[in-house]
Image 1 (tube, helix red, strand yellow):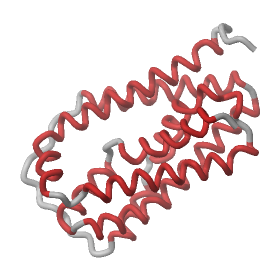
Image 2 (tube, rainbow, N blue to C red; image 1 turned 90 degrees about the vertical axis):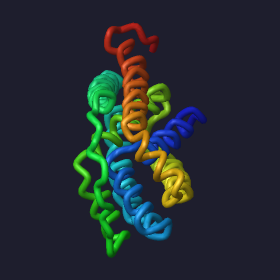
Image 3 (cartoon, rainbow, N blue to C red; image 1 turned 45 degrees about the vertical axis):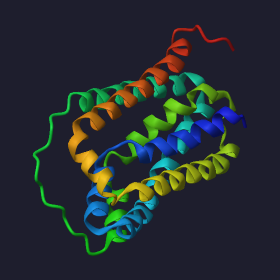
Image 4 (cartoon, rainbow, N blue to C red; image 1 turned 60 degrees about the vertical axis):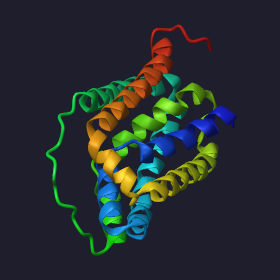
Length: 213
């Protein structure tokens, strides 16, 4: 188990939560309208979905590695293109309509739980993000390392949740996001494309026979 592999799993979990997406926007709306406590309950529920999707992603990645590096490289290549696709979509996103009313959520925990578990993009995004950030340490991946990776990922999720809970509900943050939503989304798209480049960088040499055994 290498430090780079552990750090990659931590960063993958951290960025999986922090990068603005549907759940981030939902959290911002709840935090702005109902305060940090409601936002914290939403994130506690959503954490269940985060753990499910990241577990499935890591199992798929480790399984691909035990089958062979070629399969892992193909997985990395596919995930790289996927990240590039959603990143390009974010970079070219059109601005949303202004003045939309905030929705009051009576049961934030239940909303977060349902939101996290039923998110159709949860698994592919987790798979793509984790593949991009642990591909450089593919040689250290095995099923014995899976519990440790899941533990490190859990720490990453909780760290990201604490960061978000610490900032939601603040008037300055809410006003800043509303004023710069398009820029924030585009910057997130650039970050996704950076992950895509990293995934492709690690996958391509193995597929074309440049990687040393």
